Every structure is written in C-alpha cells, then in structure tokens.
Image (tube, rainbow, N blue to C red; front, side, top):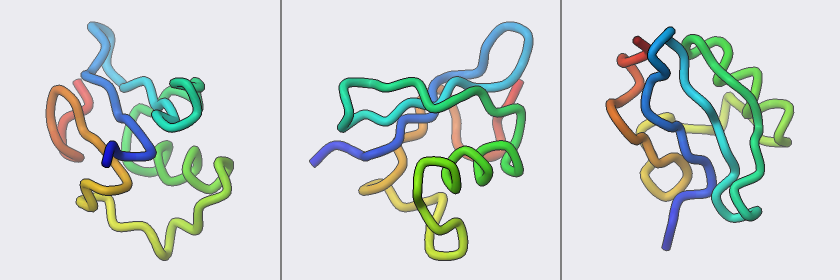
Length: 70
C-alpha cells in the first residue's frame, strides 16, 4: 500500500513539496522544515500529535528523510 503523504526531494532553493498521494497527488503545500510539515499535516486534517514522521504507511520520503531540507 502506498503512503498517504509524499514528501518530495528538496528543491534547488531548499524546502520540499508535499502532496497527498491517495488523492491524485493533490498539492498540500511547500515545507522548509518539520514545523512547516506539521502545519501542512494539520491543515490536511491529521493530528500531528498522532503522526509518526517515520511511519512509511503514512509518509513516503523521497530524496532524503526528515533531516534533509536543502
């Protein structure tokens, strides 16, 4: 099963595009770090306190894990 959220590889200027994979790749926003990602998850209806950023069922990290933003 594919992850619900895709965190794309870092952009040349830093930051990463965030999409909802199960909803035809709907663009959820652009994050420059974990705080931005948590805000985007909250806006998407997820409870950040219940989300594990290392959960591969929920989040697919492309081009680096949670510590790679540039």
